[in-house]
Length: 341
Image 1 (cartoon, one colour):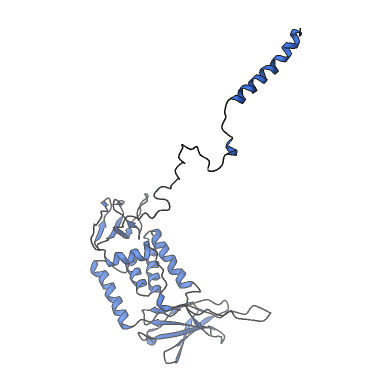
Image 2 (tube, rainbow, N blue to C red):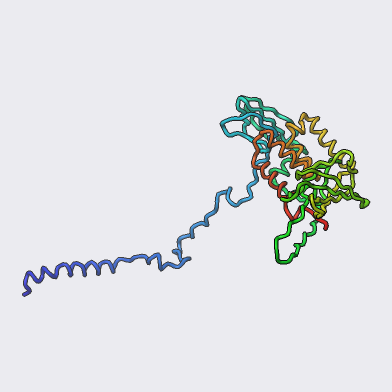
């Protein structure tokens, strides 16, 4: 007969063996690490595929804008609308006590919100969209390309090869106007790159018949043609800059003066702004910039945006993007236009 103490020592092993035998009789599902990716019970449906919310990756149209901000005067500590912002139905135009907001609705109505007032922007229904509103939306909200397809791609400027030695002084290149672009003034402003050693500059202007006019332009890098050399509407010109002292004339650039017909059409468009009660030099600066750009005058459009910024009106992101695209168009080597040796 086994000794009681020996049986007591075997008791834990006997209990552990019994537990192992019991658990082997209880069915267990296989470990998740060993499941096939597509394995499902026969009577169970696979889980539905996850779909993103409607606003993620779906073509959900934005609400149709019904007004655009043309002018914001005054300041406020609370965030508000900015020039060029588009308002949708349900937006409230809240103006601070020192603020005045001017809106252009989709139907062409001008709405002025004085300080302390709040106007609810309502849906105009199926009313026809005003052409000026449509133009502003195309240039700002939809961010259409600003390149003029009729101008074609200008030829690239070949790199200049030079021998080993000191880096040669680069020729002074014209900056504005270039690239065959239109100018509306018969005495346009000319701008060019500076040269460190130049004491002054001389402008050379070639007319249609090939004759050249040379004019002293002073020491600055911008100069406006004097009235006595007013250009001819509809004519093409080339120009170059010569730093003084020296006799190195830089590469030529070309531009065109708008024809009488284009200038008359531009005058009608700006006159239409005034008839609406919009001053192109005041409340209508943003609208004037859109008109100038649509008619092929990017320099004038940029000038009006600069004047708008100087007036203190806060810009909406749409106007900031419009300004950025204008600057890129006028300074990019791909769109700046042809230079002539």
